[in-house]
Length: 203
Image (cartoon, rainbow, N blue to C red; front, top):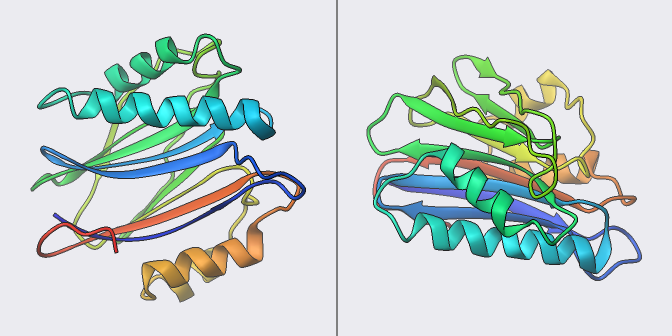
């Protein structure tokens, strides 16, 4: 699977430690995309996000197949001695006409193609009071745009902006939204992913 990725992340102004993290990882049956936001700011938030990324990688590469629900529960267990994180995850499976989504907390996810789909996460904090996780399925086709961001990117990105940017390079889309909507008062992360034909690549 060939995907193109545009992604930016930075710490809150005045901090060097970034409590946000993201992951775009090839798996045995497709691609997994995650955006993670450690609760709070600074080193404690960064530690939680780092543990979460490590747990995800260990989990997905130790099994041939997995559910997003199982992944979230593994992260919840691993993060019990931290302040926790919020996270959203999207899985694109080879040859599947559906995309798989799960989320806990306030990470924004949009799936933009012929339709515009706005998956809804459940409440809670992974590692603290995570609600029951639901793995949702949505219509999907190659070329649809997956856009995910933490709450360091202001909500309410205008539809006309997304329409104007849709055919741009994924890096350009991420850069334009980050420039216009990121907040210096919080860690901020945006990830834009689009599947293309050919071998998988993250560049």
